[in-house]
Image (cartoon, rainbow, N blue to C red; front, top):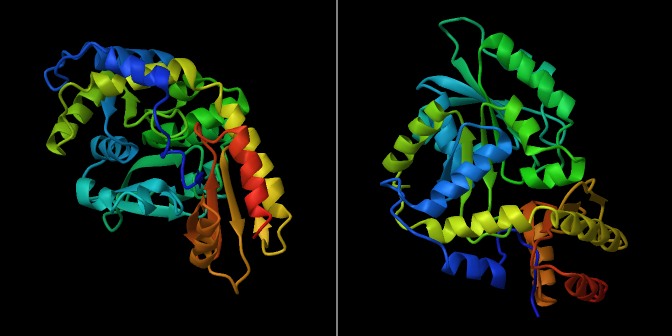
Length: 338
């Protein structure tokens, strides 16, 4: 048995999810008549209190679509230096939107209202024009940490005072919601646009949702087509999303509990220098300078445990739908052999 903890993207659809996919009603999404896609978009928009939603292939696509709609060439996006939109989307801000970035050094990737206010460009022809502020919740590179909602509200106020939209890369937003008890509608009320991934914690095979106003989504749909993101009988995939929203949200608490246990197991190793605080389903631990993360990951692989090198001396482990208590017990046995 391989224990795969590289990411929560590696999950397989459950039997019930496959049944929902197989029985989905289908149409042509580019033509706007796939009933299951339409139902998913309506369900998600209603959940977050938004006017509309757009079902797309990935979180990278929904983030990049949002940036493309919100910005203009020559503008800048304020975000943390650890943001997924900056580090892991292939330079899309520059390539797709011809925009620059203002990289801030937040608390494990979380920005403060004061930092955002100071980063907004002055009204000066020598400067870029700040067109967007983007937050990430939970923060992948920060070990799955989440924002204090009052800080998000304070950042929202700064954006309002400066006429700048606020975007959320909410790839793992449902992890944050389960951990805090906050609601989708609360977040929908403070962000102009939200990207939510269905293929991470919620266990779908493919897909993310972009949420916003009707006009915003209309523009995003056009750019999605330009990017080659229009698809046809996508209802098969949308049905998985419908099932996940109905059945896979509350169970994220199980992933969080297992991540905490993994942290306890890992902490017993004399080779581990430090472990990031574990807030949701991501465990990041630091190795001494004498051990490369790539070498450590190879050692884990020999024990049939899969993880990811997350820096020169950092290793990331992510719990997920397919990682059970039985896997956790087996992980402990094998890790002790390290």
